[in-house]
Image 1 (cartoon, rainbow, N blue to C red):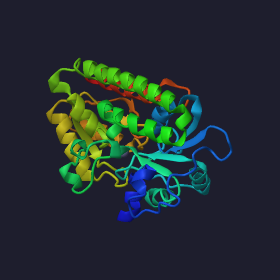
Image 2 (image 1 turned 60 degrees about the horizontal axis):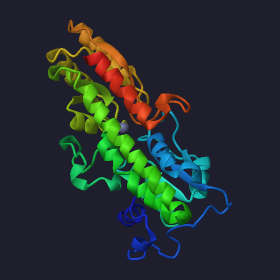
Image 3 (image 1 turned 120 degrees about the horizontal axis):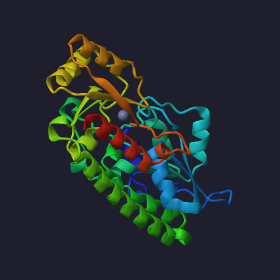
Image 4 (image 1 turned 90 degrees about the vertical axis):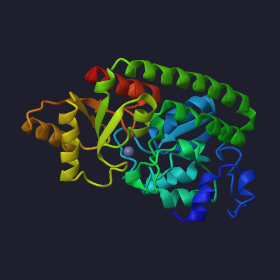
Length: 314
Ligand SMILES: [Zn+2]
C-alpha cells in the first residue's frame, strides 16, 4: 500500500479527510445503507466483528470476512469478498499489516467509504516492536484485553457518524462493553496468577501472544515470527527445544489458524532429548471459534485460551 493511501485508510472521519490529500468528494460514504435496511458493516476478523456487533446492537448487520480457522496473514480476497467489501458502508480492519494481502483493496475502498484501522486506536508507544521485526509493529493487539478496549470508542463514533439517530444506543452499548472488557482483563490477570512464576512460559507456533505475555506476565516463545508467512526453520525448532528443556516446560500449544506439524516436530525433538512435553491444547490465535459456540465470541475465545494455558502450566 502506498503511504498516501494508507493515510486515507487511517483517517475515518470526513472532517479529518477534508483536510488531507485524500479525495474529500467521496470520502465518508452514504449516511445510511442504500437499501434502507440496517447499516452493513464488514470486519476482516471475527474478533473485530464480535466487538462491533456488540456496539451496533440491532442497528447494523455486522459480518466477518474471515471465518473460524482462517489465517489473516495469508488471506487473499475472493471476487465475492470484494463485492461484500464494496457493499458495506463501514469496513473495520486490524491494520499493522495483519491483513497483509488486503492492503491494496483496503486502500482503494478508503477513497469511497469509511474504512477504520482498529490498531490506530492504540497509542504508538503501547505497540510492540520486537527487535527481530525491526520496522514492523506486532499486529496481535487483541490479546491484551486492556488495549482491545481502546478500540471500542472509535467503533462507536464511526457508527454514530453513519447513523446519528442511534448514537445514544451506540454510546450505551460501548460503555457496557468497556465495563465487560475491564472485567475480563482483571479475570485474566487473576487466572494467570495461579501459575507459579517459574512456570510462566508459553510456547506456541507463531508469535501471536506477545501482547498477552507483556500484559499478564508470561514469557512467550514462538517458532515463527509475527506473521505465519515464513515457515519455521530447523534452527527455530532447535532454539525453542533448547528453551523447553532448559526451563522444563510441561506443555506447549497448537493454534487454530496455523498447521500443527511445526509444534509436533518440537514435541518429537524434546522427546529425543529425554524431556517429555505434551500438547496442552489448541489456542485460538488469529481467528475465533465456530459461530454459535463460546469460542465464537471474543470473550469466549480469551477465556478458552487462558483456561487452556493455566490448566496445562499450573
Ligand atoms: Zn498472527
